[in-house]
Length: 90
Image (tube, rainbow, N blue to C red; front, side, top):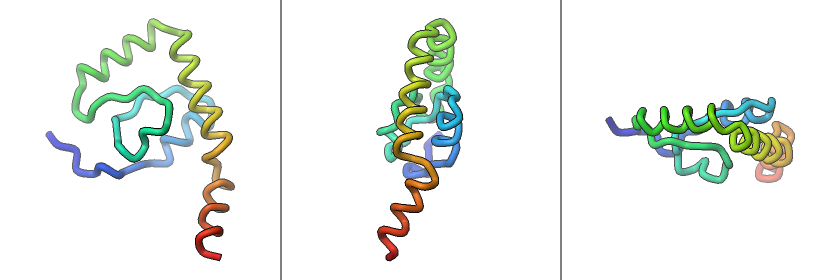
């Protein structure tokens, strides 16, 4: 089963950590700069391994959550997006 959208991203990448949540997402090349745990698309064994790891390791889960939250808060708000858009358009 191949993943057909290698450059896909979603607001969920930013909304969940922006609200302080922890998440695990598929490994999509264009979002590799986000410091969140990832699994290869379709690798459900790898996903289960990550889920089990982060359920057991509160410290690692909390560090990942904080790192993502701080990055999104600093660089990926809607204000940041509009400043970028307007900088290109204007």
